[in-house]
Amino acid sequence: MGASGTTFLTIGRNRFACKQRRRFSRVLLLVLAVCLLSLPAQAKYSGGTGTPGDPYLISTAEDMNSIGADPDDWDKHFKLIDDIDLAAYTATAFNLIGTPISPFTGIFDGNDHRILNFTYATTATDYIGLFRYVDDPNAEIKNLHLTAPDIDAGTGWYVGALVGCLSFGTISGCHIEDGYVSADAAVGGLLGENFYGHIANCSASCYVWGYYNYVGGLTGASRGNVSRCYSVGEASGNDYIGGLVGRSDYGRIYDCYSTSEVSGHAYVGGLAGYNADYISASYSIGLVSGDSNVGGLVGYNFQLTGAVVASSFWDIHTSGQTGSDGGTGMSTVAMQRKTTFTGAGWNFLTIWDICDRMNYPRLAWQPRLLADFVCPYGVEINDLAAFVRQWLFLRLSADILPDENDGIVNFLDYAAFAAAWQTTPASSNWNPDCDIAPEGGNNIVDIDDLVVFLQQWLQFGASYADTAPDGGDGIVNLFDYATLADSWLQGL
Image (cartoon, rainbow, N blue to C red; front, top):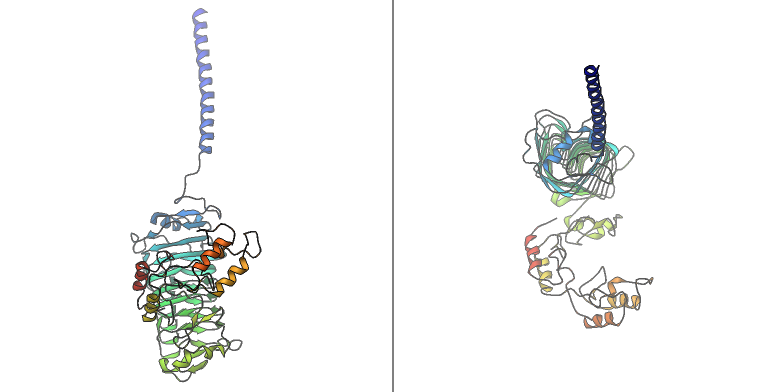
């Protein structure tokens, strides 16, 4: 009994110990599981969670390439936080984003950064671009610059540097610089085809070539709206070739221009090779050549519901054309006269601008070069003379009207001071521009401000020539001269 009892007791203790260890193991596993669940998820890309308030952050070439490798993320929000060079990805190495079956439906904010040296070369693949296919009314690609993209899709269709096909969605504030794009058809500098999307405030500086049809400096074909866009460079192909849009069907083009050189066989136009909708407040000044249905603005205008291009003019001298199916031919002198266009109802307050009797009209939204101080457009001897007149002038704090300053402190500025006299930020007549003394202001327009105003009375100051660095430093000096020299003899 003693021996066997001892043995039994020992076995019983061992069994109890085993049960204790099993219980401890279960508790340990449970604790480990809870701890693992409590750990934060491993960050993707360079941060963010892909939501509207916390977009995925893209800062490297690897980040950018990873987007195209994960279709599950193509409905997410992205934000570029640094310039990216994709030169390491050649041929078909880069993962393009979206497909017709699984399109990109999210939002990509370029945040005004650049993607450099995007290269893609294939022999016969459709839908080629940084984004292959975008299809959602709420999808958007915005504020992105592509520098020196080089795309060769061989006999592929729907090809652009940024997007192959935009079915639905918006592209805004995107720009292609020094690009090359070639394909068989439906090819453009920015995107290949815009089905029903909206393209706004975009540009393409590209050489665009198509072996077949539908070639445009900005987009090869479009059924959606295109607004405040422009193209620079060359567009060439067979039929339906346009400086901005190769073929525009049932989508409006407004507030746009093209300086691209355009060449093709049939339906060739400086702005659009073929148009079947409405074109307004737009122009083209590039060289256009072709065999049939060729126009400086539009190669062929399909009038489905009446005239779709109205109050249009062309220069009979520079074009060598005295007749056209639409528009009015004018001499170069008349084409540079403001009254020619105001008589036809053109709006020079908000839509158009002109250096009267010096230049053709241009769109009011077009930015001028920093050193383009005076008419005519471009930086030349008149701007140098204007700059010299303000050499070493200081920016006068009391010169506040009109439009912030006109180079002299006079009665316009006095009227503004009088209206704001003795006011504070709580007053309805408060004008912070009149609160100039002591330096930086003191939240009241009083005798201190008047003393400074009188000291500057009828003085001339820097009204436009103080451009550098970063908007001016209060005096016209060598920094500003460097800006002038850098822009010398540049045009639009």
